[in-house]
Image 1 (cartoon, rainbow over the protein chains, first blue to last red):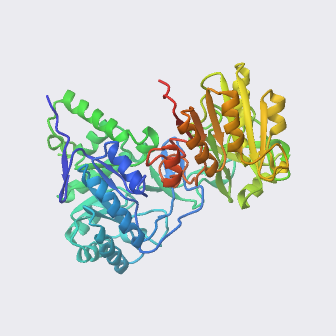
Image 2 (image 1 turned 30 degrees about the vertical axis):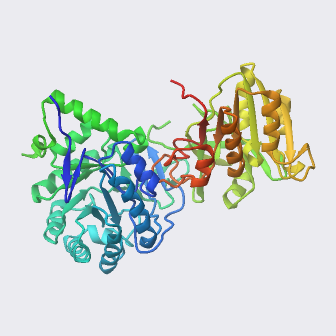
Image 3 (image 1 turned 60 degrees about the horizontal axis):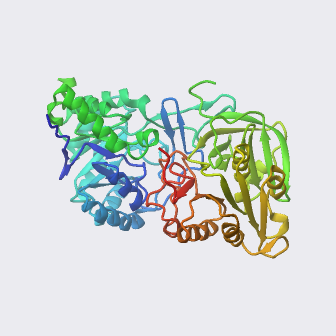
Amino acid sequence: MPVDISCGLPGMRLSNPTVLASGILGTSPDLLERAALCGAGCVTAKSCGLDARTGHPNPVAVDWAGGVINAIGLTNPGVDAEVPMLLAVKERLSVMGVPLIASIFAPTVAEFARVAQAISQAQPDLIEVNISCPNVGDEFGTPFAGSPISAAQVTAAVKSATCIPISVKLAPNVPSIARIAKAVVDAGADAITAINTMPGMLIDASAGQPYLANRVGGLSGWSIKPIALRCVAEIRQAVDVPIIGTGGMMTGIDIAEMIMAGADTVGIGSAVWQRGPQVFALMCQELGSFMQQAGYADLRSMRGMAIR
Amino acid sequence: MNPTTSYDAYCLKAKRCETANVNTLIFDHTLQRAEPGQFVMLWLPGIGEKPFCVADAAPFSITVANAGEFSALVHQMRIGDRVWIRGPYGHGFKLRGQKHLLVGGGYGAAPLLFLVKLALKRGHAVQVCLGARSAEDILLADAFHHAGCTVMVATQDGSRGLQGLATHAAEQALRDFQPDMLYACGPLPMLSALALICREKTVPAQLSYEALMRCGIGLCGSCELDGQTRAAAAIPPGWLTCKDGPVFLMNVEPEI
């Protein structure tokens, strides 16, 4: 039985559900193209703000038994430099039929709108609105993803600044992610990306110090998969828009589980560290074999089945 | 070791002065599973973290130049001081064939002595070309010589050996020694020059690149090489120095 693993996000068709997550290999046309050549169904560039940022000093990312902890600190060249980079990427990806997602962040609602407007010049297929970076304290992120009101304000501001569909990236560390999802969808979000990394801290006892120069960072990899599945399940029960289910996706079976929780596509990040850039094709093969054995003809026949 | 611990603490056991500016630091225990050409991320808690190539694995050693704020601190460490290490990371040198030509430019000689030890243990022939600005900057020449290699030295000011660059010495050695494989570590212009020579003469080569490292594990994209450097050795676009490298294999069939 042939299986169909194609799927959709607002305004685009994907040959498979793997989406390179923001912040991973998303810094140059060569790296984004490499992810696409390795089989990613869609790629997301690293988050970009109005002005250039160098990010945090080292250590910025450390692998451990549960995956990776990172606090890169939103390193980016600023939107004026990001636009030509994205245009170069788009030219290369369009011949391959791989859509491009741009990611933006900002410290205020008004600046979110400015960055969204500026990034739209690159005509990405989707704009991901990163309101949930856990590594920059109260400067960016936390104030927006933490409450339905502020999350909705950012969503509405970005929507009014661009004609390109948007996906709002939510934080897992909130009392009710479903309420926030509902608020951003009511404010115009076309899709939801969930989840961002889970705030955490690792300490080296012999050094008496946290691993990261930023002290705290975002956890990713297999330790957060149960959190991501729970969040996506709750969001799916609250809203109907497509979900990019992200967090701890390492194998094709993980993709199946995430689709069963209600996601439309899956974000792939730490798996690139664990299994290399070729992980996209590997996960698609594993997903295909699983579906064939289990008798699922397409992703739709699995979607949300675990929460019905 | 606690399996959730990422760093391993090493205690400085001995220090060897290599040049006025370069020290080798020898620590108290072995770095497991390390091969020449690989690197570690060295963390000084509260100060920072930088990549260093492995100068020896048993016991773990690094050769450090007093070249910046962070390396100055490492360079000046006292016996008994500790460092925290994660790694080894990346792909190192792979010994292929029986006749090896090693080229070290400046501080790039540091990881080559570890490779020499492996090659000589197997009874292989090794010739080393070292280049530096001046006689006092030549690194590890005596160590290579005592280990049993033929050593050629080139200095830019002609104060020792051939007057010129490490690449000039390497060109001569390629003609006279006819190695099965060239291994090199050093500044980017030296690697690019060697890459062009090896392409022209179809000499198999393994070139070790240095780049800005942040995550060290292939996620952040900071260690991408510039287009000009990549082009000289025909390194594929999107090649990550930390994960795919730091050693790039040229004219070499990958091992199955």
